[in-house]
Length: 451
Image (cartoon, rainbow, N blue to C red):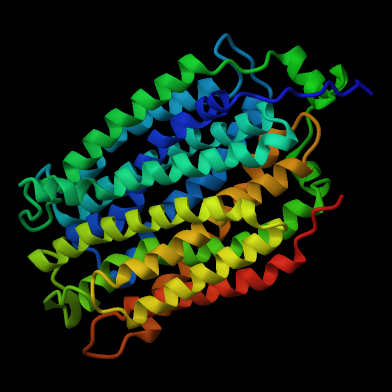
């Protein structure tokens, strides 16, 4: 067995540089999360079908991220092993971010615009996943166990800072006079310009990380991780790795299932919920189905306010991430995070003032902070050997699978809750999201950190 060479402590700014590009990636992800339902509703989608549009992002994640993990585990170039995939993913993300919000601007019919938007969404999420996963892998590659919690906290901070910027762009552009309404089937300029600026920031951040971060060469990496030369050349199947996965991998994945179901419902149904409950958006009837009038100024104003609420969530996440290290037991911190988030989701049902909703989304931010930092800290500390990237790609399945389940079943659940002659009660899906987080908190007790 190759003796394990102690991995050195890294200065703060090196930890910062490893994750800095995540700021730009998260702007792209925030633009997608806050605006996809709004974009497709504006193009003419029925709210009962909105969840189906959300199947593509996690579906691409569950395909792409393990592949990136496997390939990058076996890659070494002058730029490193993870950074080439990061750069390629970011390049394609920038291109697609300039296309997606223009789905209704090319003179196509509703069906053609929907298909164009779906294809653009698929390509965007493929590229975001390709660019996002290397950051998590680089922390596992280059940071010792003692500093890993700090490194993922920095990544969580940059993630939330990027989200904050991405979420508020449409609101800011509308405030300075850029049009927030558009012709039927066309996405407003406030959203289109937000995607353009987000794309520019994304590529600049990724270039910064590419210049500043030098990954460990293969020989040094093997010494730090105790990998034999025979292990470096070893090719192990995914199912074999899953069979050998530490218990932490599976028990943390159980909690992840309920958490990511909840947040998929939030991304899908917040626009419609807030438009009705806090903005009194007018209704219209299409083919005997009562719908929110997505061309109304109230609906588009609610769409911008959703960005503000998600930004408040990001602020809550940053604040709570400072509290998490004060817990002596990381599992207790996880439980507290999810319980607060569950209360936040359920409270939305009772909040009809747009400013009182800040309280709800601050609490939801606590759950987001816990979800970003704690599972990956637990899992990477439990992983040994030369397949870290592959394992992290596979662990992403615990994020993607629940989102696919939520997207597949969300429309059916919403349809069952809809009363004849009434608009879809999307706000009940947020209450259900809160219940899921509380169930996730109960499941934390099953997480096993010992090997």
